[in-house]
Length: 458
Figure 1: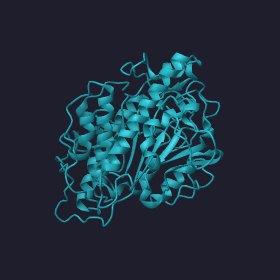
Figure 2 (figure 1 turned 90 degrees about the horizontal axis):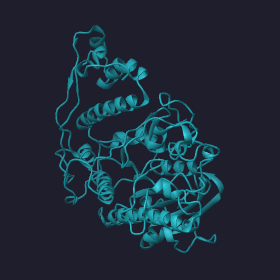
Figure 3 (figure 1 turned 90 degrees about the vertical axis):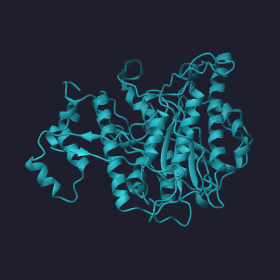
Figure 4 (figure 1 turned 135 degrees about the horizontal axis):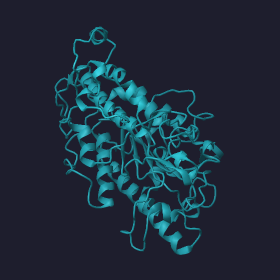
């Protein structure tokens, strides 16, 4: 904040005194007494983001038929070829003519147009597909959506990269055109978000008899968070962009607890899988190695779906210019972003390709796990739509046409995997999102810059 604010008087103006009880759910997803269960598994939807593009010749197979040969980047996924659709010729037209990385990330899931503003005035032009879904059907689960990642958000302006706020490249989930949804990068905290809340937020006030508060509390449609937000408007408006993200994250934690309390009073039918998911509560902090960090976060993501804590989620393998050092891979020396600009130097280009292959190996791990989980005769993969890809086709040249994408799962029979789907050139990727939203029961007529729901998925 621009001014020092005492913690206990942060929301003094709201006149709210709130102390929420602990909430905890069993990790084996056993139903509580009286909870009604669904008769069949629900449909889930996930978006998995990889930064820094690919080597196009190692991603896109030659030819144009439905069948295709496995390329080097797809080699780790070969045994899952019958479980995904390789998507081609999709793009975001609002990526053209912009900075190479930063503005392309937030519109990957929205199709909006990112304004070149200061870090205190973010504007991506649209809400992301996952958050729209959460707004429409998120009340069916205890957590509307889950957002996981690996990199901490970045601050400041990238003056060498077109003058865009680096924060744009730190988030793919946007609650609205101005508000990113914070992603959790600490495994234990991500796990706790699913099953426990032993650090419930406390909001204090020095004036609980505030007439405005008493009047507001008499209105049944007024949530505690609404009161908190009213009292914090000036703080949010006067703070920096990073301050607003912190406040939004805090408010979201309050909203999450409030929604769980509401759900406990009006429980929705949920899907209950048998047995215990093989994952204990992680240790505190970030794991020692990057691979361990990735695998643990992917396991938590799967657990969120398997336990029916949420049916909508996003996962970021890295931010817009992820500088994660991949020297732990044989033959690689350096970071992902730096090696993506290989300038067609063969040794550098080879190292870049190895990093991309490592990411598809992680997706093979992920798909293998979700395919192995039985849900009463079908698998979690059968009952999901899992999109993987990025906002750049060619990481070296920042090309944006024909994005590297695939869609895994059978969508409860709404998808026909095991082939490639070549859409007409320059088809909006938002056509895909519209089709996915429709399959989730969200019957929007349009989304982003869509020209209609993508055909040929089933």
